[in-house]
Amino acid sequence: MKSYITALFFITMAVVQITAQTNGREIMELIKEQDRGTSTHALVSMDLIDKRGNISTRILELYSKENNEKKFNTMIVFHRPSSVKNTRFLSIGHNDKVPEQWIYMPALKRMKRITTSDADQSFLGTDFTYTDMGAMSIDSATYSLIREESLNGIQCWIVESIPMEYSGSDYSKTISWISKEMLLPVYIEMYDRQGKLVKKLTTENIEMIQGHWTPIVTKMENVQTGHSTVLKMDKIVYNENLPDGIFTSRFLQTGRP
Image 1 (tube, rainbow, N blue to C red):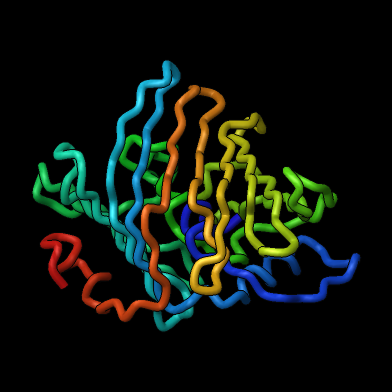
Image 2 (tube, rainbow, N blue to C red):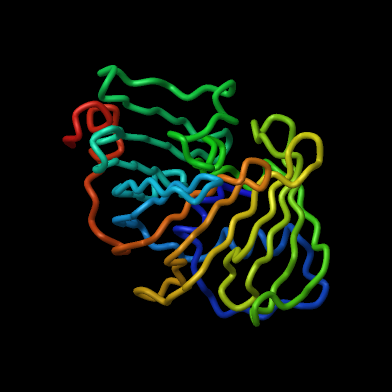
């Protein structure tokens, strides 16, 4: 599977006719070919929920813009609470390699490059890893259509994705329930290197915004630890004219284009 949290923010609908012989790779190609818009700007609330039900809330701003390789560059800026304020994360998408990623930690006043050894690490205490935060190439996995079924009234294809060794993925496989109508993953299971279910991603309250199917609530749950992360779109705007300077090391370090 490509990036989990990024794909959920940007995959959109098209009216297509698909034969019963469609295979897993063809379904992923259809998702890839959708018009995602040229940019996205969102205000997001993030709840970190521990196994006892205690909630810690963060507020972040997300910017994303299509680059010259037809991939997306993403900048995430944390605004609240004070413990993470002005922490910034930059991901640069590429066609032929894994995304380049950096994070700026204001407490240390330095920028850190995310390496392959960091890929399976938690992104700032959330249930997303750095691998989850980057939009990976469709060629970084193989795909199989397992079956078709209805999930909560949504007709879905169930597609199994097995990452290539070079992809840097920390999962042995993912299984995605993809809406036939919206061409959007509505539920994903992620399995660890031992083949055990480790995380589940669920989308809720999917709305059509500016012609784009948009999950308003996304929940990533770690079934092994009992911890979960819930993202809620408080505001989202597509096709805004975002300055290229947002997606630079200067902005990462200073917060200014």
